[in-house]
Length: 240
Image 1 (cartoon, one colour):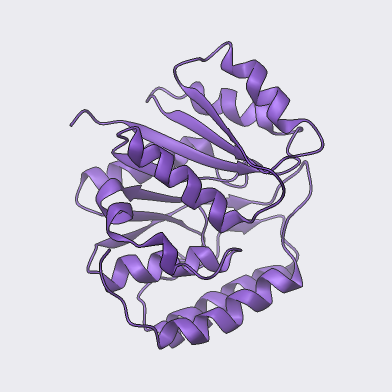
Image 2 (image 1 turned 180 degrees about the vertical axis):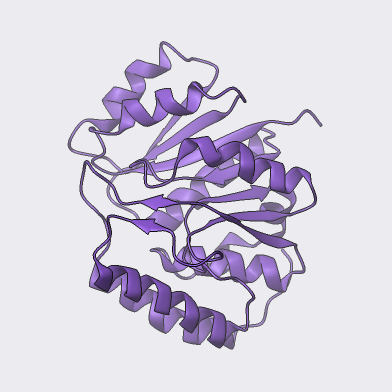
């Protein structure tokens, strides 16, 4: 199978970043395709992407959804489409440059060298986060400690959202089992991959908080993840 790589980028009100992130990914020496999954952004994010498709008709794709349906379902819809189109590697990445597009080749290369899942990790080599308030850094770090302890999963950055999956991992996971739709989705996916016996590795990155646009984090998202982890601990895992 010819190696094809798809970067899935969920968006909601990302007009400040949309064009810049697309152009940055397409400027890399290694080619990547992009699928933007937009949840009906009222700020015109989808219009920006639609105009760019005229410039990059074979590499840029847009999936428009009606309403804000959640991060997890955006990725799952993107993964389904990517699998249908025959992509070998499918990558999660934020639109706001908190994930550096220049790290994309490193994530894919880790999978080429034997990993099934490679995680752009903020915590596998200490704490590598820039521009977050200390309170949020501690909350994120302790959240990963909590998840790692409860689920007995050897991953330092359990809530990371910069991840490369080999298609065989996504083909093995039953998306209907994914109950958490916010950031808890990230925990569920790593846990299922690990429990199904896939090789999960962490690649150190430097995470930089967004400089434009608005964060989508909320207390309800955090609460869903906390209680979802407890429930996840007692769920049986099986292949699709």
